[in-house]
Length: 245
Image (cartoon, rainbow, N blue to C red):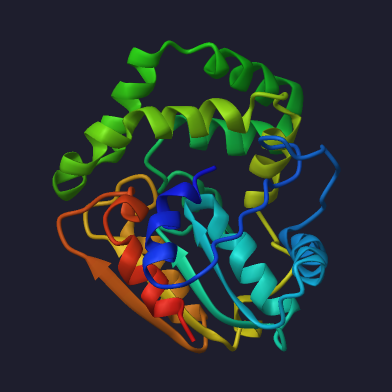
């Protein structure tokens, strides 16, 4: 559902925005996916069903690894990539603790060590009142984001609640996948990759963008001044235009 923030931009630029719920998240069936690279099989089949040949991929925040995995696995089909406030590989424990949300730090660790505990925490989060979610969203926003956050707050809350609306197992599996090997190496991604990073992002900080820019063979880092994590609300047109053929 978070792809809705790019939908209007896609219409303005004549681009079709297609988004699939990841395993066990939103309305997608739950199934065990050992690594991010297996997601490329789903995207490949989806593109076939839509009679799409080449296409570009984008991933916001924790969706970044999925977009990069598709590029690594489908070099003849994926022509360009955007990571938007995207996560870099969490290869060391210290990388987990670079992330700005305590919930991410706890859940990534718990999902690897004790999955039932991670599930219990997510179920508590699912019951959080709107005022708590609103406070959390304001924490993600930085100066340039604040003007956009007001009218979009309800949509962002819906995204969170819908993600775990059918259960928490999919989200627990996703948190487990973030730490350690992703199933591919970043130097396998030879397509053009634009790394969009908010200058004031504390959720996925600049250190992640810097690591991606160093490891990817053909990457461009675009830092958006005075913004935090909510880049799709602010630079949707620029992201879509950059991915256009």
